Image 1: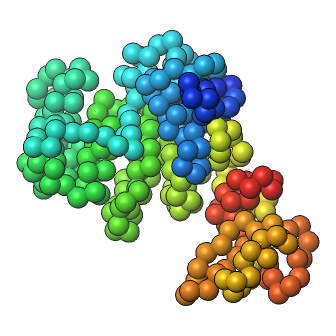
Image 2: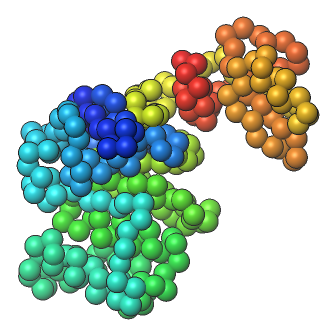
Length: 290
């Protein structure tokens, strides 16, 4: 089973081209969709989830024509959008029961067994009677995964799932997603490089609606071998260095700027070679240097 996206394009009425001839093949397992805010990730996710129509292109899940068999796709889909609403005073257990009923699980005993297993899997069993409004950010995201797993989906889409989570909750969420990704297609849409580094064996980088890279993260990093150089500098030097070198990122370390530059040859001026990572891949691709 794989998801095939072919020549997908979408332009909004205000002229923004959110998707520009996007083509991807997404296999079973964890697949990272990496890009800055406004890159077109959410538009792509919503289109795959049949929540909006593209201007052109095709999407197939196995032999299923997603854009022409929307109801059948929805039976096989689990979706956790970036922002999702719930009835705040309803308990997690009752809300899952309601959503399972909407998904067509009419047998009360089967529904109860499913809900119990989902609460255990997402570590929410102890708070199943609590109102959702009392949940922390991490608990709320785990509930979001629980509702997305109703019906044993073949395709699971999660859009910016770890934004705002503390490190402990993020790790718990990573573990849960990794477990789910053993058996289904999981698309993780994010602008957080660490999410993709720790979870995904395949990925794509999208920017301004276009796919800049698709493949394994290790391959992307390998392509940068010997081309990333770093140096601690003074803040007053940043503008001048930016005009002389292909600076791809700047971050403060103990109050001092550390810059990474892209160069096929040693740039001199005190720069030292550094092993590239996925963050370097991301910034260099966004800057159009590969």
